Structure formats: C-alpha cells, structure tokens
Length: 127
Image (cartoon, rainbow, N blue to C red; front, top):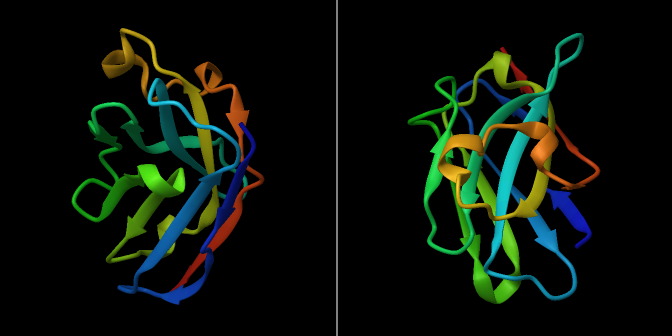
C-alpha cells in the first residue's frame, strides 16, 4: 500500500498546517496508521496514530491538545491537523501503515511494527 504525504511547508510559530497521507490502491479497515517525525540530529519519534477500523486515536504528550489525526475512508487518506505549532515541531513528518493487531492500543507507538512508510514531508516552524 504505497503512501504519499503532502501538506508540509514553512509556517510561523502559532500557525497551523494539515498534512495528508494518501494510500493508493485498495485499503482495508484492518489497517492502522501512524505519524512519526524526525528532527535534524534526532531520532525519529512517534507523533500520532489512528485505528482505521474504529477511529481510536493516540498522541504523544508533546503534541496532545494541539494535533489531531483523522481519516477519510472514501479517499483512503489520513490527515494530521497541526495547530499552535512551535519551533520544536520542525521535522520531517512521515506517515506509516501496518496491519491492525489485537494489541494495537499497546503498540501504536512502536516504529518497527509499521511496514509501509511514506517519503516524508518537511515541516518548518519559524520563531
């Protein structure tokens, strides 16, 4: 299931961006989608995730209350709405997909469980 991200760019502190992750081809409700990011000189980290089947969402503490992950079944697309952006949100953002396991509520943040990754999109927040 190839993934294509879009929506990154340059924004000022306090601004908003919406990232999109489109899955081409047939997409099943038995998938889960995650958003991760990697800042320069840092390891890639979990940002948010969504259980495609039932819509449960998960967030890292650093973005909780500011970011919202959602899905559009008809468009096979997952979104990451980012509000109140801070300079520390600057990173390359990746979406990723995995088969939905029974223990997803415990493993949504585990990167190596996600088998398909997008190419990444740059988000830069200026101070």
